[in-house]
Structure formats: structure tokens, C-alpha cells
Image (cartoon, rainbow, N blue to C red; front, side, top):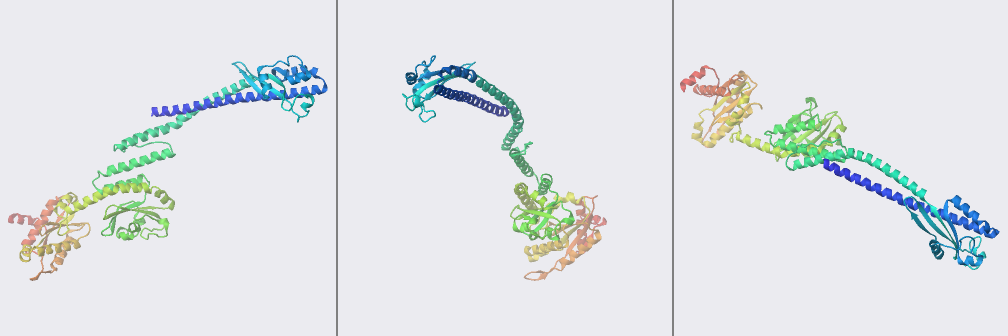
Length: 570
């Protein structure tokens, strides 16, 4: 950072120094030109005054008085070495004049020959003198007419030359003083500018270095950098975008190591609440195959939720059905499912896989608040889209896990599933049914295994229809089944068991040789948190064994006395 700051400040300093030199040089040259111009204008004015005076003296026959006039001109006009030179034609008509009017310098000779004004600068440290020579040209169109007196001349002839030295030292000195003042002011300004530039450039330099460090880390896969800056202009927006990218990729890197999709949904919810300050929202998971949906995460009060179909029928959701965002302000009751008086909403659909979709439903009290949230839509979408492949992977994992934990013939859970949830069941009170088809071996022996499979599937269907959603049905092995019923007492459980037995007994199985029905025996056991689940399963199995040994086609509740009978039979 120090190196970059030095470079920037050095460039700024050089720019100001060059600018100062250019301005100073320009001022000096302008003052030089200005002083020369002033001197030339002054000399022209004096030359015209002297010419008019000489003409007047000539007309009034007072030429002998001209020396006094010339001395006064030197005195009052502050010129030096004022000299008049007569041309040969004037000398021929009027004589040599007085003094040295017939003598001339090189400058006067040049002007007399060319008929044009000329000057020479004599300059040193202390003095600046400009020697100027101006010609008097014969003109017939002027008043008075020069040719009336100068009869031997013609238009354009040089009648004489006036020369003088003008001291421009004061003007030059003034120019030097002004230049020095400007340089001094520039230096002061430069110091102030450097101080301001240093304060102004410092946050940009820091931002630049932080960005460089963050990008370098990002290339190596480290998105932990966070750029802090007080800048609010375009540079600040760049830092904000980099921070957003870092946050997004940190999120992606984090969820890739999460083992459950529920954790990923929790992280998305946390971002919605903390990053985007969204308070009221819910995330819905939709099964495309069954067109059903369930609420995965919800922060909306129950009485503010959309209508009762919201958690059931997916096609009622306009965002899901149209695969497009739905905004409540677009049209009155644009989505009847989401409509709620006094509330505004915004829904965003996302595709997770071929069979799973997600809808994010955001609810606020005003259109303005919804519009504010919508400004974050691209970033919110980035988070959900980055989560999509990870969620898809978790869904596939869950499906594979689900398949491994289910019986392929009946679709019921298997014993592997029982082992995976046994620690959860142990902490709950429940009722266990151990169910077995009476004399099932004879079915396989008499009618074949296809018919035997049909009998097993039919019993599984009866079990599925007989329990509520929170209960668990498993194929324990062969023709044995295990039911786990929660939030029920033993008396009601016995009633359900008898109902299952009766419903199964009513089923008639048709074969090519004959029709038949089968019965089942059910052993019932109570489980509480003081027992191990394996023990409760064993007790249900003992009750089942007791039912089979005492006539079959019956429901038996476990009693401790049955344990001794089982041990004796073993």
C-alpha cells in the first residue's frame, strides 16, 4: 500500500510541478511580450506627437523651438536617447538641421531603408532597454499633405526616422514579482492539494490493495476476505460486489459440506433474515410428480398464511405453475392462493431437479417494502441457484437412502430403517404391533410365490390405510410386519389392531384353482421411555407367539406372564 501511495502522490506532485512551470513560463513570456508591446505603443505615440509638432513648427516657422519640445518629451515621456534623423531628400531641401540629425545608427539606417519600424532589445539582470526606430513616411493623402513641402519626395518615401530607448525594467520587474507570487501561491496550493490528495487517495489505495488481496485469495479458493471501505461511489460499489461474491461463494463452500438439506434451508433462511432483512417469508418444497407441496421454513404468523390449499395443492401456486415471479402489485388478486387483505407479496420459483421445485414466498405490509426487497432479487436468486446443485444432490441421496430403507415389494420401511430411528423411538411412548400371516407357508406351497407376494402386498395396503401420518409401518421380515403407533393408549390400539385383522380377513384372493382368504395374528406391546425399544419389540413378538399358540387370528396384548411361557417353549 505504501508503494502505491508513493507512486500516486509522486505522479500528482510531478503534474503540479510541470503545471507550475508551464504557467510561470507562460506568464514570463506574456509579460515580456506585453512590455515590448507597451514600449512600442509608447514609442509610436511619441513619434506621432513629435511628427505633428515638427509639422506645426514648420508651418508656423518656429523650428528653432523644437529642441525645447524634444527635451520636454524626454523628460515627461521617460524615454532616453531621443534622436531625429533626416533623410537625404529632406537635407537637400531644408539642410542638415541642428545637432546630429544627419547622423544615424545601424537601426535607423535599417528603418530608413526598409520604411518599417524596428526595435532591438538590450537586456541584462538589472536592466531591460528596448531601442525603437520609427520611420516618417511621406503621404499625400494625409493632412497636411507632406508632398506640398517635400516637393522632391513622392508617396511612400522615408522623410526621416525617429529613434529612442524605452526603459521597460519596471514592467519586467512587475512581471517577475507577479510570477513569483503566482509560484508562491501555486506552491501553497500544491502543499494543500497534496494533503487533500493524500487524504482523498488513501481510501482508494486501501480499497485497491484490499481488492487485490481479496481477488488473489479468491483465485486460490479462499473467499474469506471482506473489503471494508467508507467510499460510497463506484469504487465502493465494486467493493460491495466483491464482498457479495465472497459471501455467496463462502455460502456455497459451506453448504457443500452440509449433510442434510434441512440445514441448507436453514442457511438460506438465515441469509434472507440477516443479509436482506426479510422478516416474513416461507420456503415451499414441491414434488413435481405428485404436484404436492409442503412448507419447509416459515416465519409468517399462522393467521397471515395464505388459504388452506397453500400447503397441499401445488398447482394452486401461480409462481410454480407459470415458472415465473409473481408480484402482488401487478394485478388485483393476481394469485388467489397468496392473496391476503392488507398484505403485499412476492414469489420466486426455483427448479431443484426434474422432480423437485422450490418457491420462495415473501410477504410485506407495503408495495414500497416489496420493491426494496425486489432490488435484491438477482443476489437472492444467486444464493438459491448456487444451492440448487447441492440440494439436488441431497435429494438424490435421500431418495437412495429412502430406497435402501424400504422394502421393494410393499414399499414399507424395512428393518434397516428401524435401526436408523430406534434411538428416536426410545425417547417416546408408543404402541407396537407385531403382525404375522397365519399359515403363510401353505400359500406359497399351494398357490406359488406370486400369490404369496399378492397376499403380502394386500396386507401392506391394509396397514397403510389403517395408520396416521406420524405412525410407522415396516416389513419386519418374510410375512412379519411391525407397526409403531404414537399418541395412543393400549385400549384404542387394540381396537385398531382388531380392525386391521378384520379388514384383512375380508380380502378374497382369486387363483385358477380356488378362491381363499387369510387371517393374521397380532401381538401388541406398550413402549415407554424407561425401556429399550428392542425389549418392547421382543415383548410384541412374545405376544404374537402367544396368539399363534392359542388359536391364531387374534390380537393379544403382552403380559409379563407370557414371557415365562415363551421361555418354556424355547
